[in-house]
Image (cartoon, rainbow, N blue to C red; front, side):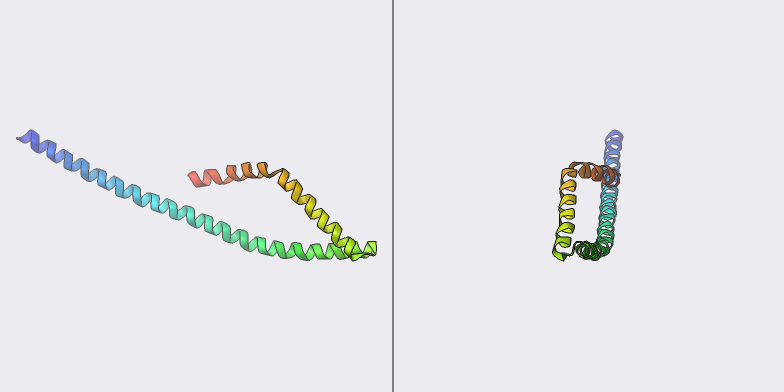
Length: 115
């Protein structure tokens, strides 16, 4: 009878240890998800804050450049057209290099996400 009691005691001990492991793993994954979520949200908040100010600066600089180019060419519409063409050329270049952007982002974000 002592063998059966030992097996029963060992089985209940294993069950208890397994339950503790599952609870600890669950808590760990919840903390990991919370960490990743807060890192992502803080990154988005920083990008939005800095990006909005950079966008406003870019708008004002573009208007100033277009006015200056238009003033030197004696045609404001031509100045705005040239600034617009510069942006179109930049967009085409970024579109052509989009795969490099994707790989760069994956290399930077991947290790932070999976650690």
